[in-house]
Length: 376
Image 1 (tube, rainbow, N blue to C red):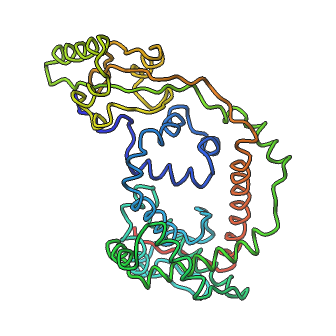
Image 2 (image 1 turned 45 degrees about the vertical axis):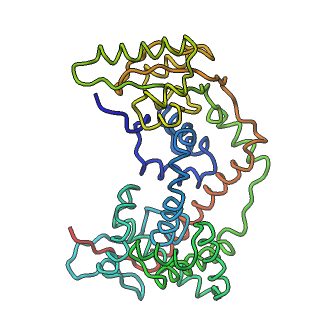
Image 3 (image 1 turned 90 degrees about the horizontal axis):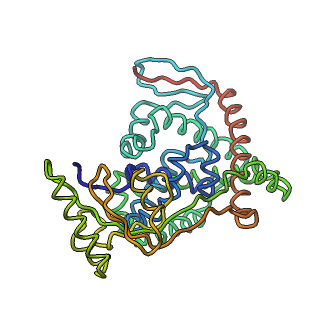
């Protein structure tokens, strides 16, 4: 029997990816709708904050560092297109791509990709994806310069200071952080300046002339009403005993004894801290609020059937034997229109921006005769 390393079958890279992607769409409900996720993954998304708050607090700097570097070094544009206009040619010339007056060498592509290859792989971003972002960045910078857009030194310094403030780092700490990522400050500033230039250009040209009406928002809400339903949830703690091979009966006897001690009046939290064999034991076995999906089916079935304030009998999962203390229950809820109106607006605006951007970047690539050269 494997020892519990995390009550959800989901790894840290997935959590970071989901968090970042959810942030883009404004809410979990909208994210679920946009990607047509199944109930199981929807349930996992609903539980992320409850189960990984401590992780996210401890890894705040790392998480926000990832966002910054993925933003600046992969996609200087927030909007991402995987569609590009250009022939893919396999060649050994040392070039990764050519377009207009520009050439990108394989060495330049590797310099962009290699320092963050682990992050890219975790997010399923290929080297060709990074190459296409580099091409788009060149083309958008050219377009911004042609339209007389500039980023001043003061603007650059102000944004850099904001980033350091959000990371709670001084100049020396931030410089060391960049070095740890295999980057120099000069490289970071070039990427940051390019991002600011492109953002300003897109905001003041492509994205300046569309708006979302109240009627549009209400229609979106009514059409997708079922996706704004928060399923029933339960708040609970648990104690886990992990059987040794061939000693399942001993584990069952131990968890049964703990159940009896709780029923006799001993404190569940203290017993969890002392006897539970899982990483969250230090927090008294606290699981927070969760739905029916994302956890072991046997576990959730018992959790939802146990009355509030009572402890369950032994529950067997692949992790071992549990007892569950149910602290509270919450019925199914529907997010009201006025509660999520702003999130809906962000989602619809994001969709429209993406459509506009895809059309525009496809035209730029077609005009520039993009050719991709990659080694087999």
